[in-house]
Image (cartoon, rainbow, N blue to C red; front, side, top):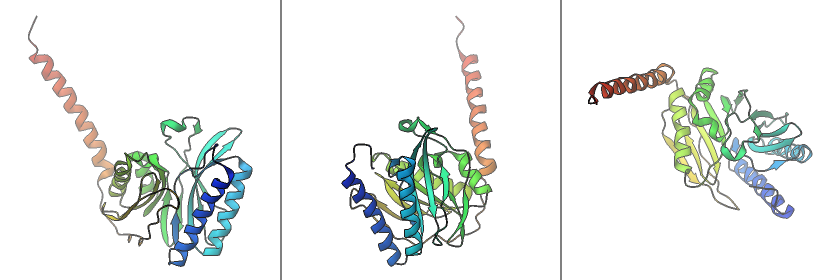
Length: 251
């Protein structure tokens, strides 16, 4: 993470290393490169310089790039995922909906983003967003066949964070590509099978090159089974409370 106290030379080295990874992966045949969440939180002018750099890199390398960045504006901070296309067009921007405790001063987004990427409809989400079933269902209903998820874990929760996101794919019949700082790089299919996984690491970082899971029609009952199971739990809780009250000895 490039924080406020990061020396400029170190910050430049981090950005250069990400750009180097993109170029190297493109040279190995990658069509899409997913980078982690909130690489830095920048003022608009500096964020625009990053945008221009990676927009040009996507065009030059001929790949899609998903980059996580924070932008600090007068109205407040925003946690964003930018999707850069190989044609050099302006990036699609997605704003994180569900904010983690350390980012309570960020503004929450409410829009969804589904775009044709590498011949497949793909949705954008950021880390904690994928812990919430309604957001996952909204992307399934919008026709997403894969989710692109920049993330930032806390090391000890890396397996849990990755697998909670995998569950969203099972519920809604889409593949999930997730790249987490201090976590794991994970590719899973619509059946919940983890097809490739690699631990992230400090500079110079970790790279995972994996095939994109094939999009298959998968029957899913999550739309009605999930709420039904929840209400069943509520009904059972009420029943057990009533039984406990009736069984309590009279005083």
